Length: 165
Image (tube, rainbow, N blue to C red):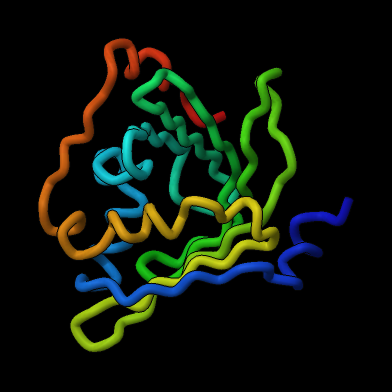
């Protein structure tokens, strides 16, 4: 299997959106754990985000819980961080055995476009990008400007507890 760095040479999917907010505001929505919890997970999914930092080498963990009780967890490490401009990180879903599966590389790019932000996300493997289009529609101007309190099933906080390692 090729390394994540080798995979990044062949980007499989890129999604770009124009968001009605500054790159700094979108960056905060993407990197602040409290902000991420407001929008993580489309529809009936709620999420929890933790990270050891926002610097290259820092680990992160995203736990998502569906209203029916299903839990999915993603882990990875930051590779490159340029605040309010660019982030490159690895992405791997935890399997039922609690071990990371196939790792892909994700590159986020934020660029000022007048008073808005052009936000792009590129994946080295397209199947890992499923669902992001729905998430990006939630990050739009209403989510950035208006607090959203996701519904959380009883016990969700405990199920999603976990820290980046």
